[in-house]
Image 1: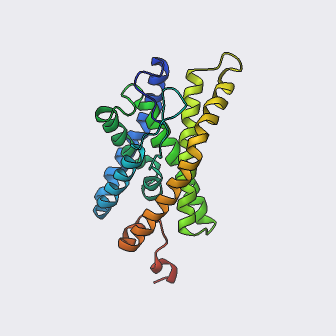
Image 2: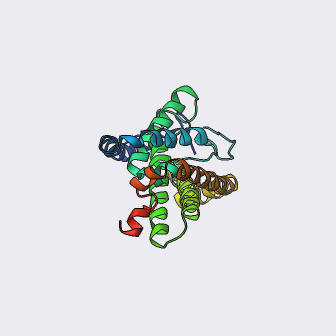
Image 3: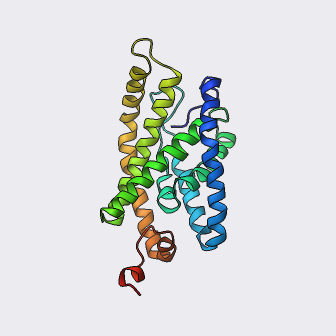
Length: 228
């Protein structure tokens, strides 16, 4: 998913920066507010950030020139904190990886933030909330949110590459089909694996800090259900 340093034309690199920075700025405000109101969530924030860093650092070869395949790990943050705060976590992760791991790049940071830190988490959050309203169990909801959020990230990356490098025949649409099809070979199984791992992490958190998940409304408080 990480688009490598210098791969995007300057116009598109700048465009994705402009699209991403307002969301990250809003996320910083929301993060500061949340930490002040609920300081006990700091440890879960650290877990969500570390989870995204570890999974997205698992760089696998991709047939798509200028990019790579890997899990994103942002579904956990989206489920617990929402997409805006997750965009901040993703920005930190992507910046560190660009500077110290040569994974992604600074010129393509805006595009990578938008795909992994905004588009994917938005889809993961919407899917999770829809599953909650439909009374789907917690683990299936987490699995679907993480897997679909991962796929949304790669669809967005395919769009970013397609608009920057339209095909000679068929233009942007044809280019998107090519990128998306190639990404699907590796990303479909990776997203399924990410969904399973994310569900296992959430299950563990429910065993050790269920109170934090209740405060964040990831799960319904037993007190709220009983009306006490």
